[in-house]
Length: 165
Image (cartoon, rainbow, N blue to C red; front, side):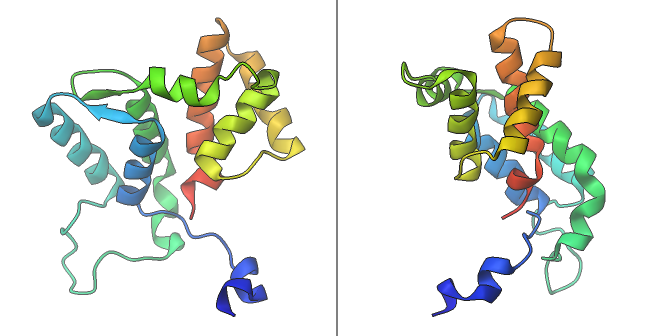
């Protein structure tokens, strides 16, 4: 069966195309669109910077679907993740609902919260190296726990497990 084959399990991850990544970020943070005009202009600006405006590829074969083509635009992707986390005229994340999904009474402390975010974003728990890295990154952020969680969420949206499918 194809779904249980070694080839499928050992296949390298495929980098999401910029449009797919941007939509995935907005879905992950439960982004609520504000004023339509500013949202569309911001989205087109982000996608233009990343070289992936829908239906704008001149060749009849469509945008490339292999990771090598999109590897050189990681900084604009990171900027797209940060833009989606900041409230503005174009919209805002639904932090109240997102927080309710992550912050349970039984969340299990900071590591438990990190793993709940990872479960929402990556569909899996973090390994020990990832946990250590995120704990260290949060410790470097000045401010309260809410600022640290914002920084960790941004970092997890920018990380390779979220960049690829």
